[in-house]
Length: 253
Image 1 (cartoon, rainbow, N blue to C red):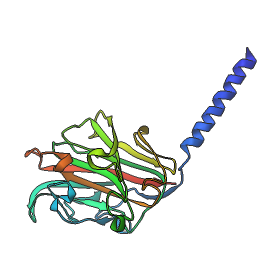
Image 2 (cartoon, rainbow, N blue to C red):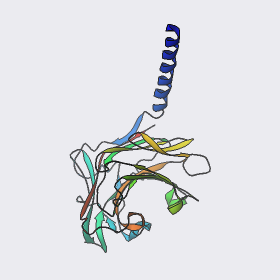
Image 3 (cartoon, rainbow, N blue to C red):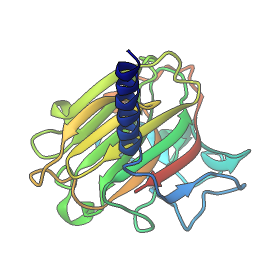
Image 4 (cartoon, helix red, strand yellow):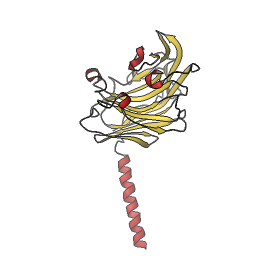
C-alpha cells in the first residue's frame, strides 16, 4: 500500500511540475506600464489617435488627448467618454496605442481593468498588426482581448479578425462575467501554435495559429472607450460620463 501511495505521489508531483512549466511558457516581463505616475500617459510608451468620423463603425465619439478624456492618477489610467458636443461629435473620449513605440510577436498580455456601465458604452483592449498601413484591415489581423457592451453588462467578448473571418463573421467567443465594473484581468497567450484569450486566467477562446493567418508578425496594443456605433448600439441619453480604469498593462515573453 505504501508503494502505491508513493507512486501516486510521484505522479502528482510530475503533473504539478509539468503544469508549472506550462504556466511559465511566457514569464519574462518585456514591457509594461504600471501607471505609477501622474498626468498624461507616458509618451515613450503611448501615442494618441485623434478624430471622429465614426472609425468605420459609425461610432459617436471624437477621440482627443484632453486630460478630461485620458489621464493617469492614483496609480490608474482613466479613459473617459464624456457627453459633449465637440467638432461635430456628441461625445469625446480617448484612444491610446503603442504603435511606433512598442510592438511584439508572440507572448502573454495581461491587462487589469474595470469597465464602465451605461447602455451604449464600448470599451476595448485590443491589438492590430504593425503592418496595418501597408496591408490594411483585416489583412493586418486584429486581436480583441476584451470588448464589452454597456447594454449587456455580463458578457465579455474575445475575438480575432482576419481575412474571411472579420466583422459579423469574425472568430469570436464570449464569457459571462458577474461584475464588469470591478477589476478583472483580461489576458492573451499568443504562440506560433495557438492564440488563447482569457478572463481572470480562464481561457474561453482558443484559435489555432498557422502561417495562413496574419498572427505571425508584430502587433501593437490599443486601449479605448468608444460610444455607440454598429456594435455599441444606441446610447442611453442619461449616460454623460463613462470611465474605463486600467491598473496595469504587462507583456511577457
